Length: 125
Image 1 (cartoon, rainbow, N blue to C red):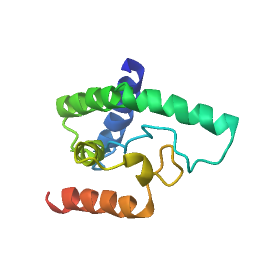
Image 2 (image 1 turned 45 degrees about the horizontal axis):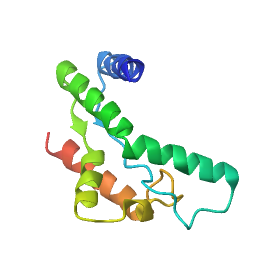
Image 3 (image 1 turned 90 degrees about the vertical axis):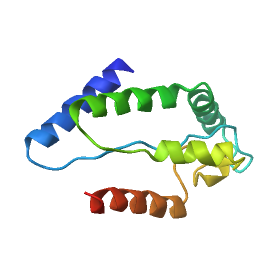
Image 4 (image 1 turned 30 degrees about the vertical axis):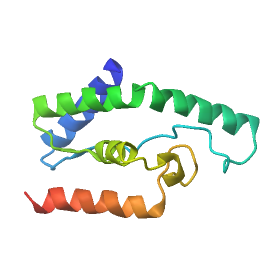
């Protein structure tokens, strides 16, 4: 996690130094269960199980929380899409069904949602 945060920090600072504006965008959830819609494959099942561990044990959230803290320290705004997925999960939405590949890539409609959230941040400046 520390290496991730340091690498992201280096990237964000270089972008800021160039004079460009930057926003850190957290990602969406990974699958929280192995979907029955996943193509039958030993390899894909293994990837799905690994993603479940990353998601369900809070590893992904820990990375984003650490990166958000660092962004606050260096003055980079955060568009927290991960939090929106947390709200969906809290409302009993099956977030795995919102992943087009049943692993980590959201369906088209959630790409639109992310784009709208980014535009809201940009236009509110």
